[in-house]
Image 1 (tube, one colour):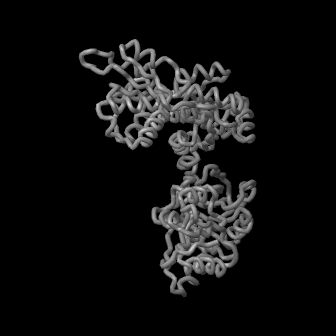
Image 2 (cartoon, rainbow, N blue to C red; image 1 turned 60 degrees about the horizontal axis):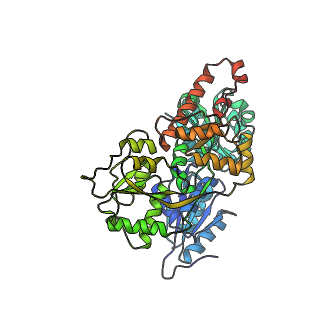
Length: 527
């Protein structure tokens, strides 16, 4: 069912999705998609890209696949536009690189409906760059929809003088090979074949023209062929597939809100993160304690507020919002944060913390830098400590030893999350994940409780010593622990570990590699 915008004029946009990676959408393409009312998408637009668009688009935006001849698709777009809607045809690569889309543009141009064409990076050229195959000098790139229309003579001439790249359906590779050979391309001409171009599981294989069909066995959907001298540089320049964690499936046992930053960092290193919440955050059973604490903050009862987690910050600000309070009502109260992530959450509400440990970001690290209470300099000698119901006594006891009175308040409860789906549980126990990142002792306890113990081949990375102790207590082998307890350092440490594995395996004789107990995608590439 379509919506009608009363009094508005509809428009049509033909938008290039680029080669597949959502990050390669142009700003203009992104704007057209998130403001669209109806998106018609081609089958060669990858699902991850569609999912990213759906997440940002208007909730009422209609998505439908492009079906039928160009005239049929044009009718759908025109019908939507004449109803006052903003219609988009989302096309893989660049719109004008496809004959069928060009026919749609021509059909729309014959009407009075306004339209635009938003260019995108061509699939052939974009994937070649991600595969590390340069295309300098004389070159031909083409996103092929119909093999029968390919000018193989031009491609042969380009390969003889430079390089060429073609985006084709995997099922058409035999016809492409025959066309190249018939046009006089040397059968020994080097070829690289790349599947899932610019995607999380992009994979390239090298071959020659005469054997490229066998080399592409198992490839499906759209693939990109690169031909010519540039293929020889793929091993050195293939940056996308050579990232430290490329292809690693990494388990992130955190809530979706907390996992975002970690998952983004993992993706930057090439990993495929899987977020599994192990903890659910709930309000305290009795709110009276927090109510008194908020009143005390406003009334000047506290000299310091010590935040130990982002959840604690969120809990206090939610209470502030309930009472119509804001950052101004924190005036005169100094703020300490146990770690940089917590400090960033505090800054997000317009307050700059007075104290964040410069050394170890833990209770001990904070206590080492926290000033003792001085009756002359500190007329108010009370500290508010809002935190989880299961928090340890280390911090409260340490502040008391420093002479402060501590109101240790339950700001939120942490409860074990529901078990993940059966396939995730099976993957955890059978070694389906290459690594798991633990950011607290509770994530270790709860993951084991709801899903079972990770397989022995899974690389275990922990954020700090306490988390390491808990992991060992549960029978896990700790492989990675950063020198500095933070999420960025934890991901960086895992990436460094993967590089070390790769270097060790590369130095091994072939027989040793096959017998090595080193696990993960890094190891598999050398076997």
